Amino acid sequence: RLGRAAVSVTMSRRYDSRTTIFSPEGRLYQVEYAMEAISHAGTAVGILSNEGVVLAAEKKITSKLLEPSKTSEKMYMVDEHVACAVAGITADANILVNYARQAAQRYTLTYQEPMPVEQLVQSLCDTKQGYTQYGGLRPFGVSVLYAGWDQHHGFQLYCSDPSGNYGGWMATSIGASTQAAQSIMKQDYKAGEMSLQEALQLAVKVLAKTCDSTSLSADKLDIATVTRPGGQVLYSPLPEAETKVLLDKAQEEAASGDA
Amino acid sequence: VKSSPAGAADMAQIEGVIGLVGKDFTMLMTDSNCADSILIRRHDYDKILKMDDHKLLAMGGDHADMVEFGELIQKNMTLYELRNGFPLSTHAAANYLRGEVAHGLRSGGMVMLDFLLGGFDEHAGPSLFFLDYLSALHKVDKVAHGYPAMFVTPILDREWKPDMTEAEAFEVMEHCITAIRERFLVSMPSFTIKVVDRNGVRVLRKPGE
Picture 1: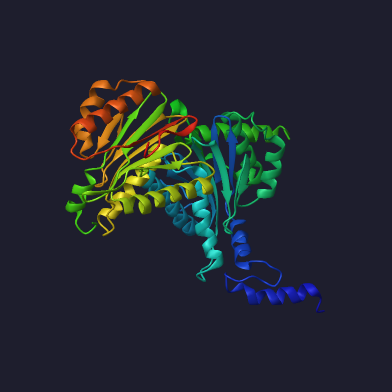
Picture 2: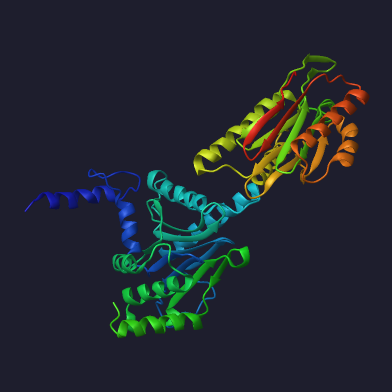
């Protein structure tokens, strides 16, 4: 039966292959397909607290035979005052993180000051947007969470996607199970009243619930904070021992039926 | 003028640009002459540009560059403020300016100007930046460019002190003017004086006054 839906499906095949054109319904299919790729990636969450920003991610360990790497595939330092977590195609993420690092250094070379966080986000998003409008190249299959501090807006958390759109958030997530993650955070997040420790605990709780909780262990989590002790911004990856403490607590609470 | 940096530098030396930092303001002064070799075209030329609500750029040197380069920097600073919702800090603006002058040095588009950038920032207070045509940048309390600097620097050294009031600073500027008129070969009947503080930019003495 040739219903309207069937016609759209066969029609959409024509608009798939070129990234830089609209479909008749006004959609950019390549951008949507990129987001689909990201929805299979390890979840990453970002939470803003009064004392700093928390980034937490689930590493998708694909094989026991893989050498544990010193560098993370989820968490990156972009500059001394900005860090990011990524979800999606790792090779694409590497390119984007490199752009971001260059943009930050270029700014500091010109102005001798750290790049304001939102401007860094905008710069990367402008790059991403370019891949949806000209050049004929596919978009980046990466969503990014940015955590940073600057003197204009204090601690900030941003999220961007393959379309080049971004938003400022108090708490958000990217990768797999974002709907589940968002609903837990919407319930538990108290705007303006979260301490760093509470934010850390909430982040781990969210990951424990949205990932396969039984098999989740501390070595599968990558957690980092951006704080400002003594007036100096600090990006600080959490040691595995501390991650374990948070995870044990989260799994305990889950087991005891804590909603 | 541009093709001979040495020649151009000689002429630029004649222009006086003087600045000092007070308790909560920065004061800038230039002579108001517009000269063409031995002819003074006009005595009421304004060489102090308002860059934004809390920044002044005093310039000495090639007058064509004053307009073109001065306004280019001014417009780029406005663009930054429009894009980002806040202006550049004085320190950031000074470093941006330095980069542009430095770029011109090795790209055939030399900027034959000496600058004093004076500004006021909430967190940093008043500040003054010396920038010359070879892109040497220094943050200073008191300084001058050009031949007039030779007559004025001893006065600044002796009379400047930290936390001066606007009246005290203005008096120091008047002493500078006296010294220039007394000893400098080139006649300078008029000086422009402007000040920038928390409330913005003010003209204390108009060009031609």
